[in-house]
Image (cartoon, rainbow, N blue to C red):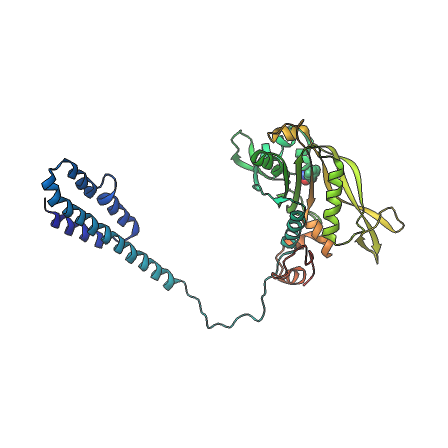
Length: 366
Ligand code: PHE
């Protein structure tokens, strides 16, 4: 066999390979498991010792030469690709730098960072779920069956022809509560999470936009009761609004996925016609404002999450993030949040360097 000719042929073809794909095919052709040179190496086993002593080094040299050529050609092709990329992407370093950083952190992002910080201190992790959700996670698993009026109440955006595996239509999640189910199924118990994110409802006026933000809270453990819920919400809201005189009022309510369900109001005072949170809403000149929905996680929901409700209990709450931002930072029109008006963003946005931390304060204005 003429190893020299085989070698010349292989090296010539490698030198002509025009891209990494073609080069890889050649590598497989020569050196792959079924490759031609690999095949030659296999013939050594059937040779006499003397023959092997002569032929062995020749085949090895062939293999090495081809392998080296492949490596060299690969480096050359990669280098050329990089050159081409650098030539097409230009960056003019002589342009003057902007006078000051112009971007700001949107109040919604700021508040979400504040929430993550506050709840991290209480031992909560941040969980997420998909915005394009299936019917089961958004409704059925949360004890909202097909015929339930809550489905109509949620003004759901359904996808016209995208189906879930169970044959129901896909939808844009109407609340962050499906993350409760996902968290239970994924991580089992115990659980302490918050789940901030976008939610969608077909609704639009000064205080409702078709897309808005919620943060879900979920605690699953043994012997959890309403007292834990109340303490957690009080601690969170005091830290968030940075005042000790936050007073909560728990009102019986109804959500299909919690039993009992509690609506939480927060006391405010009227100062120069503006609502300022703090103090009892029953005091003269004060009032109550509805803030969030919550309750003890229903048995059916815990079962849908794959857990035994006789063993595990928990509470959950859901609150509008945009609303929290409005209350804390004083905007009064929700629609402006999503207009992308640079003047609004400059006015209400936060410095990217002003990261909320518990030690430095969550929400110190720049
Ligand atoms: N998901 C409910 C809503 O969007 C809020 C909620 C969450 C209520 C968790 C109770 C428990 O209205």
